[in-house]
Image 1 (cartoon, rainbow, N blue to C red):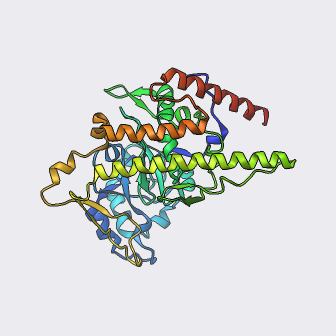
Image 2: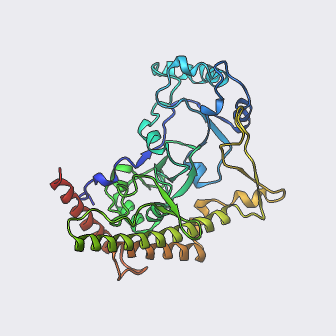
Image 3: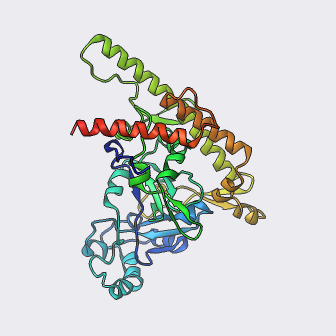
Length: 371
C-alpha cells in the first residue's frame, strides 16, 4: 500500500497523545484532595489536574489515574501558582528531567501536542484507539480525559465519524498501512499512514465535518450538522442535483450513526453491566457548582472479579455473535455510503483495498490539480 497518498481533507484531525517523560501521573485520591484546595491566584487545580488514559486503560479496565498537565505553553511563573501540583513536580519530575538534560520547561510534558489540544477544544468527547494493538477498535473518551502517547485520538464527537473508523473498511485499510511493533508483532496505528491516507465516503470526510457542529437524530445518535445544505452551483439543474446528493449523504450518515451508536451502547453495557456496577458522581472542584468529570464506574460488592474480566481485549478475542452482528450492520451502512451495492461480509480484503486505493489516488490527483 505504499502507493497511497496523504489527503489534505484528513489533516488536522488525528493525533498521538501527549508524551510525558516524567512521573506526571498521580493517584485519583491525591488528585481529588488537590481539587478541593485553593491557590494564591484564586484559580482551581482542576485547570491542571485531569483524568488520564493510556493504552492499557483502554484495552483493559481503566485505572483511577490522573495527571498533572500544564498544557503546552504555561510559563514557570504561571505554573508555580498552582501550589500543590507544582510542588509535586518539583520534587518528583524536575530531578529526573535534570539528569536527562531536559531542563527547558521541565514542568510541561515533553511533547504536549499543542495542535491536538486546539483541535479538541470545542469537543465534549473524542474518539481514541490503542496505537499498538492486536485488535483495531475505537472508543469515545470524555474530553476531560488527557490521552497518553500510547493512544491515537481523533478530534470528532459525532457517531458517524466514529462509525466509519470502527468499520471493517477502515480496519482493513489501517492494517494494510500499519507497521508492526512489540513482542506480539502487533499492528501500530499511525496517523500519517493509516488515517491521513484513508479515503472517507464522499461528503463525510474530515474536511466535511471540520465545523464540529452536530445534530441529534431519533434514537440519540449524533451526525454532522448541515450535511443536507446544497453546495453553491451555477445552474438550477446543478443546484437540484447537489441538493439530492446532499440528502443522500445525510441518509447515509444517519444509517452509519445509528449502527455505530448501537455498537457502542452494546459494548458499554457488556463492559459495565448495571447489575454489576454503580456510578459514583465525581468530585466537585473548588469554586464549581458541578463536577466537569464523568462519573466513576465501580464494581458492586461481590462483583469485583467478574468485572475485572470485562475488557475490550477479551471481548474482541471472544467476538461473540452479538458483537459480530453489530459490526456487520455498521459495515453494511458504511459500504452503502461508498456506493458499494455489492458489498457483503465475505468480500475479500484485497477487493476492499483495491477500491480504497483507487479512491485515494483519484482524490490525491484532484488535490494536486487544485494546488
